[in-house]
Structure formats: structure tokens, C-alpha cells
Length: 150
Ligand SMILES: [Zn+2]
Image (tube, rainbow, N blue to C red):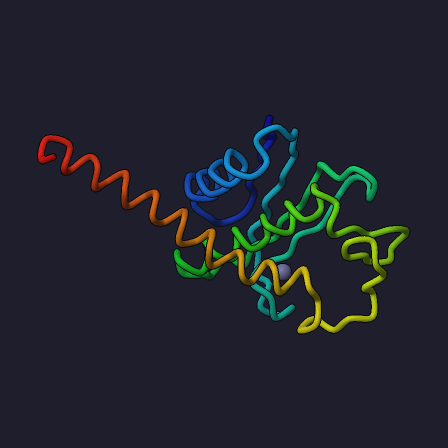
């Protein structure tokens, strides 16, 4: 089950399509409540944020914040990056225990952005997910065009 709330200036259809694709593939059995808020993040020097809104113990409610001025490609890969953080929180590899960030149950609060293993993983995954997501779109079209040709 997926409760999705999309606010701000963005293509609702694209946003929903990316999230539904991701959820069906990686978290099909989880109940998730996701709000995607599109706003200007440039002052914060970021393209996206992911925040747990309910409990640290069993997080299911998330706020994803997205920069409004991204190109379509950047938008899709940034959203997939933030969804990978959702995945890390749901699976429990990334956890905030009483405000202290843990990675695989080890205190990781002191790590700088470049050292954070969850960011390394999310940056690797955003490329894999992006190719996968776009590839499926292309294949769908190809299949359609060549339906009678094979
Ligand atoms: Zn990140």
C-alpha cells in the first residue's frame, strides 16, 4: 500500500510513476506513506532531502523534498536517490537512534557527507535505478513498435 501526497510545482504524473515503479520493485510488501514536497532547495545547496516523519524504530512515513528547477533526468535520478534512502530506513540499515545516526548498527554520526556509507550506496544506486527505470520505459516503447516484427 502506498499513500502518496505530492505538493508544489512538479509533474505529478512523473513523480508518481517513479515512486510506484520503485515501490513495486523494492518494497512491494510495505505500507508506505510518502509526501513529496517540491520547493526551492538551492539555498541549502541540495537537490533533494529525505526525512523520516514517524518513528525511528519502524519508519513508514517519509518526507521527500525536491528542488523544483531540475531537468527531467536530474529529477528522476534525484528522486530515485531519495527513495533509496527510504529503502535504507525501511530495511533498517540506516537508523536514527535517539537522534544519533547509525549505519548497520554502528554509530556514524561523526562522518562527513563524503564519508557517509549511505550516501555512497545511494549515489551508486541512483545510477543503477535510473538506467533500469529508463530502460524499462524504452523497452516498453520498443516492444510496442516491434510487436508485429518478430
Ligand atoms: Zn543522499
